[in-house]
Length: 335
Ligand code: PMV
Image 1 (cartoon, helix red, strand yellow):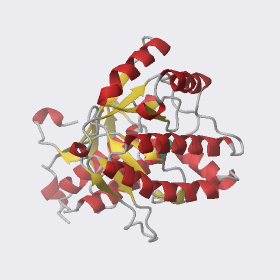
Image 2 (cartoon, helix red, strand yellow; image 1 turned 90 degrees about the vertical axis):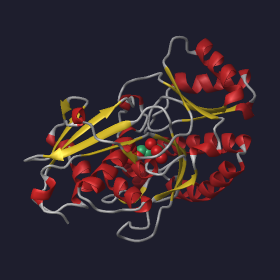
Image 3 (cartoon, helix red, strand yellow; image 1 turned 30 degrees about the vertical axis):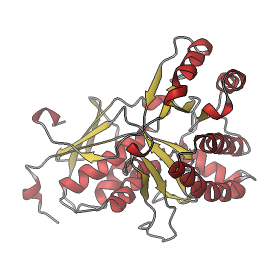
Image 4 (cartoon, protein in one colour; image 1 turned 90 degrees about the horizontal axis):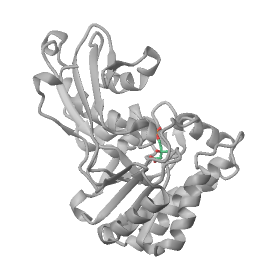
């Protein structure tokens, strides 16, 4: 471990993408390390990335798009830092992101994945991708899947210390360049029930929770096979079933959690009659905004249908993208 004086002139810069889960992470076997109850599968997006810069400071602080985060929001960042540092190392973390966080694109995943990569560089700890993924997981569970490139499989692991709970790449982004993801920002409100509270309540009160966990562990290896075979029809059906299973499970909690909106569900109902079912799919995280999947040849039809059904609503079109990576630091990067 380097000394404080050695670190005082250091800085580190890394970036990471958001990821969209096709098999969802919704339930923890251990809350302190964000250890999941089940395996999950996702795709990193190639568009928006989140950049994290790190420089020495007298006290830990996070400056998010020029605004200082309040003290109570620091623990997830400090869990990542504490895994690598010894007191008295304190840092100032700068976060710049174009990921629309309130829109439910799992913005914390990109931040914590970039933070893990930046922190390993800053504290000069050599970590391979699995260890970086496990480190990112300490800040936010889904961040484990924003470390590897392209299509990621998060192995739930069984060890109490979480060292076997990390994501690995099923295939890089070049494996399926025709795949497209379309996020539709119907609603920019923050979710009413945070994912941490939602997962806790689901595990504690839903009569469907046990079956949900089994279903994820069955679906994840199947989803990996559909990705490897580039079987879009099978992937489309399984993605939608998984998302609806998660939201049905949420609805059976006490009190019930409803993330979906009538408007979003009605949109899917109409699309079902307008487009061939094997040409598109949709998933929802803990929010009301659908994320559609399609292939490049079907994208014009999907976009035209969305424009007709939700005119003027902002969309983000992305392809599978690379994972978290160090960036060359520039003087202007200092937060
Ligand atoms: O934001 P986190 O890491 O607590 O988890 C969010 C989980 C979902 O986005 C709702 C689903 C998923 O697997 O990404």
